[in-house]
Amino acid sequence: MAHLLSVSSSLSISSGSKSYSKPLNLFSLTSSSSIISPISKSPLKKTLSLRANNISQKHRTLHVNSVSVGQETKVEPGSGSHETSNGAPARKKVMVIGGDGYCGWATALHLSNKNYEVAIVDNLVRRYFDHQLGLESLTPISSIHDRIRRWKSVTDKDIQLFVGDICDFEFLSEAFTSFKPDAVVHFGEQRSAPYSMIDRSRAVYTQHNNVIGTLNVLFAIKEFGEDCHLVKLGTMGEYGTPNIDIEEGFITITHNGRTDTLPYPKQASSFYHLSKVHDSHNIAFSCKAWGIRATDLNQGVVYGVRTDETAMHEELCNRFDYDGVFGTALNRFCVQAAVGHPLTVYGKGGQTRGYLDIRDTVQCVEIAIANPAQRGEFRVFNQFTEQFSVNELASLVTKAGEKLGIEVKTISVPNPRVELEEHYYNAKHTKLVELGLKPHLLSDSLIDSLLNFTIQYKDRVDSKQIMPSVSWRKIGVKPKTIAA
Image (cartoon, rainbow, N blue to C red; front, side, top):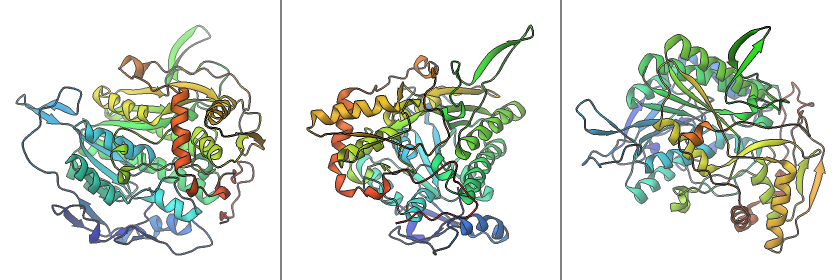
């Protein structure tokens, strides 16, 4: 993630905090977590140039929340514990990179609640993207520091915080050697396909941030924690929409009388998805060359907002994106229905993908951690629970709206993406179920609940952010400013 923020001493998150100060390349953040960023004709020019210009003059401040030391809680196997050399139970230490984001925050709380010792690593750049593009979460979200304080007050559980950029290897090295994780959950990437297609600078940023950040994580594991298990968030978008069944990572092929099992072919559809493909290749190679253990979770489209943990207090609430850059299909449709905007179906609406509830995202990550890959093993799990076309999702939301007395209309809008709008799609997803995944399937009651949730916050909706504004074919060299 980008060198964007400089953190003051006010980021200490408990009276027991320890502060380690070194030069850091980050955007300024005040004690109230407001973002101060100079206006530039090139929105990411400063972001990208900081890495090149400030390598020799890093200025980093690292704050670590000290974990309370007290009587060890007895935990059941599979609940964040493993045995030490003397047979006593010890809490597994999990570093969640990107722990301030949509999937990362829910996962960090879930793992902490399951008695894992958790540290969040994040440079808070996702919040900067909102500031940069004039976007805002449907739900009000507290600062990461207030979130962690509230989690401590509600559960008496500590989460450590490392604020910095994993593309800065010195920072990442310090985080690794300080926390010593047993597992690393890597969400810390620019996650939006539309964002990567806004203009050249954002395409470059996405690939540099995602690929270099993941490379740094691999080197950190090699140097500082060779037995550490990498759980990497991939995407089903790596596969594209082939006219054959999609296997889980690998496919056995017989060609000219010879048979081999090979990585499943990749057909990425944006610069973001291509960065994920590069990640997968780099991780697979590192497992082969260095004996790293890694699980690549090729995740489908996530919907929902609440987990057991984020529902404990309003300050723990997760973000909920509905705009055309970061919002996902079902979440966007529910917001559109709530404010009386026609559902925006791209093109013919036959685009079919795998979907899952955010409660299943956190469950899948926990399952992967509890059942780690072997040394040198690169394994791939397709992480979704059901398949839907865009038209099917629109129909489900329309029916849910009728129950609530809302007239929901659907319109077809020109597809801003380059993709097949009608196609075969059948992806395998059995490995996580075999390990114990109990999916939350998309029932009528669940859609009703999600729609009611969006209605609760409909006064926060900015209708100007609903329609898509990024075109795959019109991406250009000139930096694009999103109109307010």
